[in-house]
Figure 1 (cartoon, rainbow, N blue to C red):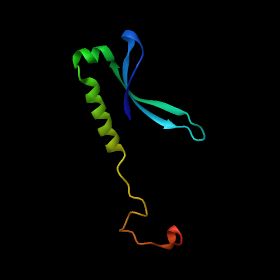
Figure 2 (figure 1 turned 90 degrees about the vertical axis):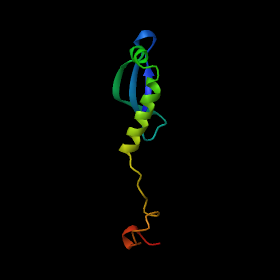
Figure 3 (figure 1 turned 180 degrees about the vertical axis):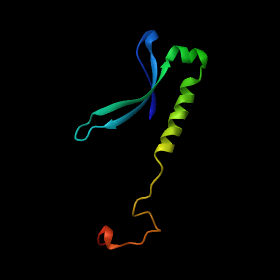
Figure 4 (figure 1 turned 135 degrees about the horizontal axis):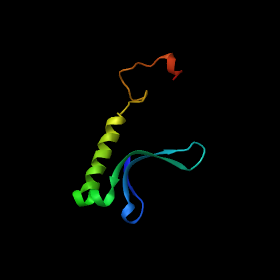
Length: 86
């Protein structure tokens, strides 16, 4: 997830966005997670709004995607035939 500023002139808007790749192509599909509001109004209210939103987006991304161990690095699980022969 990341912060995007879209539009032109006084119609610029701040969004939280997420990109996903379309399988079999090099294209991306953009999904707007949340529209936060008008960029100029938010900037007038808080000049450091973009930096704060970037931190919020990165924290949200970390909490949504916990780190998972793969089978090879998980030492607590003994090897079994369930995963194939070594």
